Image (tube, rainbow, N blue to C red; front, side):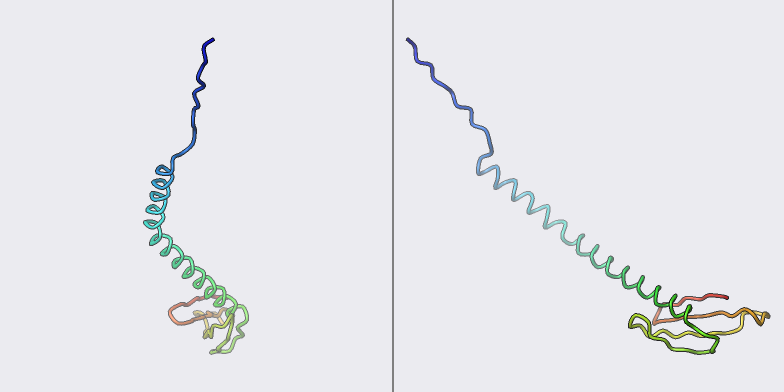
Length: 107
């Protein structure tokens, strides 16, 4: 009788392959960090600008026909100026401003 050797087929990754793969993932991750950081900064800037825009809109909605008003909406001190629009006595232009941002509305 002949004895047959059973050959074992090993499957899986070697330790060297795992270390190389983790190193490549680390290098890719580090190279992406500056891009992700700038995206986070842009996102926070866009959110802040949106909050200011909504505050300007809210100030115009709450404004009366007084020529000059200062309102605090969402922790922003917003100046609202109201002046006649053209020759019409019924139309007014409302100008809301906060720092470098402004919003105009004729109604």
